[in-house]
Every structure is written in C-alpha cells, then in structure tokens.
Image 1: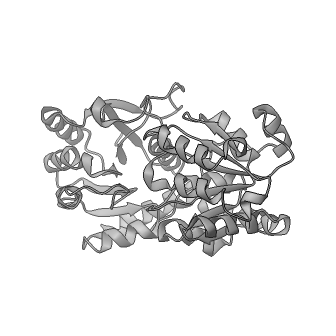
Image 2: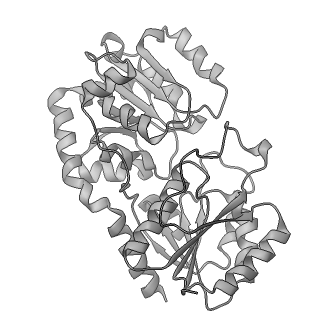
Image 3: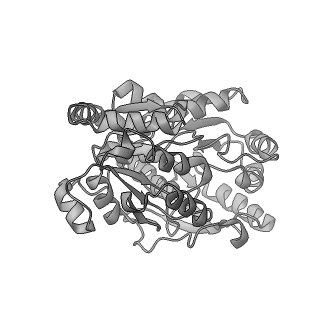
Length: 377
C-alpha cells in the first residue's frame, strides 16, 4: 500500500457546495505536485433538523483520480473511535481537518485524540467566528484547537482571528480560483440562453441566501437613487436558507418586481457559467463575512465585485483594484453600484482582474501549504 502523504477530512463527493468543491481542488492540486492523497468524507453530516436546505448532495459524477471514502458520522461517538483507529492504520504524514463550523468540533476533537503523535494534525479553517454566532462557539473552537498543530486559512481575516486565540502556527492564505470552471462566454449569448434582457446592466447576487449576506440591504439599494432611476436589474440566484416571504415582502413594498430576475435554487456549474457571464457586477454586500469563494468565481469570469467594508471581503478587492468597497447603507450601495457600472470604470476593474488571476492558482496555494507544513515541523 502506498504511503499516504495527506489525508483530507471534510465534505467531499457526494456532498455539494463550495467546501466540497475546494476539497476536491486541493486534493487534485497536491496530487499534481507529487503527493499521495486520500479523502474521508461524511456518511452523516448534519441531522435533518439542522439542515435548512433541500439537499446536501450533488448529482455530479465523482471526480476522477480522487480516492474518496464515505466514512465519518459527525454525531456518532462510536464512529469517531473507529475512524481514529483506521487513520492510525493508514498512518498518513498529515491529516487536514476542514473546519467551517463549530458543530464539527466534538467529532474532530475526538478523532484527533485517537491519532498517533507522529501524525501532523492540521486545520484548514474557512470560518473561525461563525456568521450567525451562538453562545457555544468559543467553547467548541477551544475543544477543537486543543490538539491542532498548525492552521491553514483562505483569508488574512480568518488568520488574524485564529492568532488571537491560539499560539500555534497560522498560514495566512487566499481563496484559490478553481481550475475546473467552464470558460466565460459572451454576455449576449449567456443572456439569450437565460431569456434575460440584453440591453440593461445586471447586478448578480449569487449563493445560498442567509440573513448575514445582506440581500435585504441590496434590495433597498435598488429603491434608492441613482439605481432607482436607472434600468439596472438584479439577478438573485440561490437557494433560500430562510423564509422567502421576508424578501418577497421587501420586493413588493418597494415595487421592484420588474427589476428582478429570481432563480431560487442551487446553481450547478453550467448554470453558474451563464449567470456570471451575464452579469456586469457581482454584489457581496454582506453584513458579516470571514471570506468568500464567490470572489474567486468572479475573478474567473472577469466580473467586477462590490463588497461591504469587511476585512474578509475587501482585502483582495482593494489590493487588486477589482471593484469598490461600500458601507451597509442602501444609499451608499446604490451610489457605488452605479459608479461601477460606468463603462470606463467597469473596464478598468475587468483589466485588473485579468492581471490578478495568476497569483490565485491552486498550484500556488498548495505549494504554500506544503512549505508551511514542512517548516512548521
């Protein structure tokens, strides 16, 4: 049996979504750099009553070349013991635990306790402070961190949060751009396929719809001048993880029905290509955020980005000059949107995105990980 260099633990196929997709990307990238990689994913991730969406699972085929085993039950302590023993038999050099919610802390912490001292225990952290905080978050983060050797992150913001709570080594990373996305197509072709107007500017709000993402403020911005007196439209694409009635009420009250394209479902990769290719601007006017994979999607599809004044969002936008930063005030959002939709300004941001893409590759990120883990030893 080949010696396993990296065992990645976290959501992977058949689970859908950004966490799963990036697990696959990381594994593939490490393999290309000559590493032997295995993935363990969950056979049970959330109890049904904790999952607000329609489905946790993808209908896509399992990624080629990846060894993914469906093993972990996140709320069964007997399974944690079994997994710990199995990892020790495999004896990988490094185990990377994908940590994006404190709810996984009991599972991960108990698996870690079973592992041999020779195995490096690394955390790849998407969020340290949850978007919708609970009283137990700090307790669970502490439980998870007790036996972690080092941390990897996808943003400077998350790295800073961890450093406040840990003396372990922390890698301040970036969110890489996927190697497997379809190419951007022309705006007119994409809009024709969607049945969208080809003669107006379109702002895209993309992703799971949750309270912290500030869709309510973005809708109110469309009722504020100068956006309200323009012909700009808003495309809302994503599954609602809270009652749609909340947003329906705002849309009706502000009489925005004719300004909105609404696609209230999870977007697969082919439809994502159409939505991003159609958009003139991506709105990430969030109320809180540690980082966002949507920025890397926007970079790939060369679409300028409007973000709120949150360190986890604004850092790449300011550094690369690929969009603008606004407050959470609907009036300010409205003004900044219209500034970005000016043709010269829009072209300026697109040019800067094209110049910035290369530094966000998975190859660079994986090299960064390998060097960091080796030095941390």
